[in-house]
Length: 477
Ligand code: NAI
Ligand code: CS2
Image (cartoon, rainbow, N blue to C red; front, top):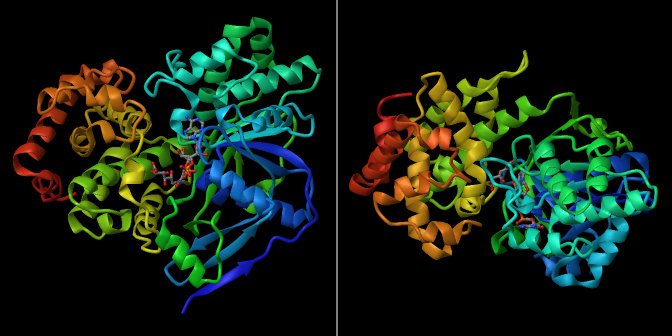
């Protein structure tokens, strides 16, 4: 017997004050939910959403256009309890891919003076930045296009630049750019992409952006697995037959740097934390939550598991995560007074064990080249400096290398072609570590790091992933 609180969306149609790029599952289950609750409390208001997909998800856009932007979010506390929330915050839904008509509508919306914030969840690869350095990848096909045709951009950075150019030309104040992707210093990385593109086309525009546009950082957190048929079936059991619905955990957190010159919703009342410096919260989450997620994704996949909850039910993997959290992530964090990292880690373990969510390891394994720097490698550099242990991180990197070799050309990663061309077997380790856009040379050239990854890779090849895990967990944690 399930016990779900049902919350309808009932308030006067709000004005559109925010444009979102990247209408994916997480946007629908996180930012849109905070805005829904804010709009409901205000009885409408100025912060309605125009949300757009730029390159995929046309069918979802058409589904939401047919429903007037309405869809449902199921927030699972456990298998039987939660909240089923109707979302009415999406006032406009656009598909700007394939050079469609919606791209001009999106650009017009970006130039609308009523729009004062642009948020993004376009995945780590959507910013066209080198994961290790944060520099714009000028060889990215989308960037090549946008440099040649800046008035008809395809990439998220290109759309931001053209929207800002139109506002400047019309004497309209800029919008604030709020990145909601899992990147370190995500506001500054977004700024880096925008500035690099703007400088290439108009130094006066670039100078205006540099002085007038705010790019606050944010830490975002809610586990939102990709939908599958089983998830839709469980929603139908709740009486919710909605092809645009998403599911997530009950937990949700949003920590935002409070820099919004053109104003923002008073979303603190919905639990958003407005702070001066997001970085400690962002690093904590990226290394403890996301670093553990990626460890489970690669080691757990090699061990034959399919979901996070299944992997955490494996005693050895749970012990590996505990060792990684306590010995390798936590020692690299500098937190403000009052933050209890042990309690945060314990809460993460409980969240990972939530079997109401079918969070597939393969989804987390996606785009590893874009994720590992902020989840493991920056921490490993810190551990090396302080003489710390990084055995779990080395095992994770070795497992990622084995996982990628096994996937071959089917690897879901922007560097799939580069990785597929690398040698197989032991020679692959040095070749992968030599990828400077993923592994900072300062780390890859450290013999202690390189040899630890080589040892772990060899152990997996010769004795199997179970033995490699046991080497670390049977030592006790
Ligand atoms: P999703 O697959 O449902 O949506 C991905 C979105 O990114 C889609 O709108 C897609 O069109 C867009 N996209 C992908 N590649 C792009 C590119 N190169 N340029 C422009 N747009 C691109 O994935 P989901 O769950 O919405 O996650 C998206 C991002 O949200 C993640 O990469 C992460 O940064 C962040 N996030 C996700 C969480 C989750 O549990 N799903 C939790 C916290 C953050
Ligand atoms: C996951 C994240 O897919 C992944 O890489 O680690 O999307 C994770 O679910 C979120 O960051 C949780 O907030």
